[in-house]
Image 1 (cartoon, each protein chain N blue to C red):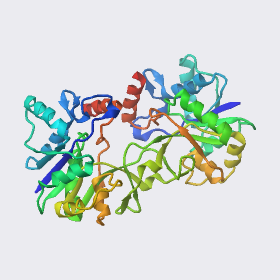
Image 2 (cartoon, rainbow over the protein chains, first blue to last red):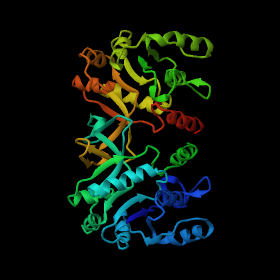
Image 3 (cartoon, rainbow over the protein chains, first blue to last red):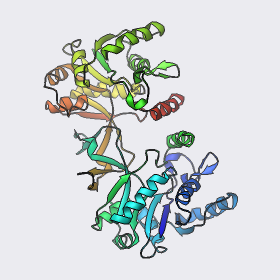
Image 4 (cartoon, chains in turn red, purple):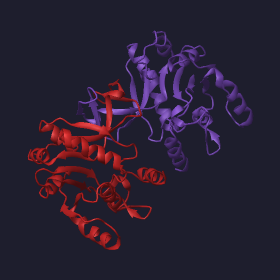
Length: 221
Length: 221
């Protein structure tokens, strides 16, 4: 059984809006609805769990009442950190499921990317999508000292990050740590290796007004 | 005395065009002309050296004859690698200059970024502009094994990369090495530390059709 936990988090201060960024519209459709549909279109049978901050659940109910064709989903309350939102969502996940965790503001994960992640996780237990770095980077030991690094050794991490539920549930029993920057880092700290597959370049996390403009280009591709 | 070497390189295979990417137009103005103007507008007295592949010099002369207000500049022949193009350009650089080296397809370096690089290089001898990574990255030991890294320790490198000419000329006397991915890496291998200053986010290297579309957004900002 396939499940996706969609994590819709912060208020989007960088967006310069009061509307939580996942509720902003792209061509008339809220970003979060596009994200949900990307998984529903990949698999109509997928179980969808949406983690939302407590004070945004009412707003979401209003959006739902005004929007056609939002697939059925479970709503859970988000926590102070992504870790706790996922943990709350895991209460609705059983043994033997394959579970994707995905950012609510990533509406452009392709069906191919989602498929590759689920297939790889089914074999390896833990799979994430990555894309190559297109720019040169340097490593900073401190603010003043840096060295060139080989950018081919580094890749950009996207979501969905997909895991066998048994591994994921066990990993999320660890105490919270500040270096849990994504779900793979939680599972990795638990001692489980992470496989990677190709993501798709358009699968960006929308966090700034510029990202909104770039997203409008992606909608036209 | 301030100098800029503008390196206009490859044929832009990723662009899907036969026109070298630096000659593609953005709002009617060739990218390379916008790049030249960004330095001229920063300082009307700056010495501009343009390194172009031999078989594109004629095309450039045609563009020049049809375009008003291109600032005076020296043209040098590019080499097989960026290293050799810069080396050729350095024949026109004397002692005591401060020399910026800049990608021909980066038309959006702000005057502030250019100024910060020149000022820092005047103090430290070598300065490059950097911006923070907005995405999570992982380090790949090989294709199958990767680990999370702290993205705050890494920054994206841009140009102009600016140096005191004495250091730069000496560094470019080293034999060519394949790990010379930019000018800072040449100077660094020579044993000289590289300072960094803040770049500007829009200062992208235009290499793909998507970059052209994003550039059109930047023109409207």
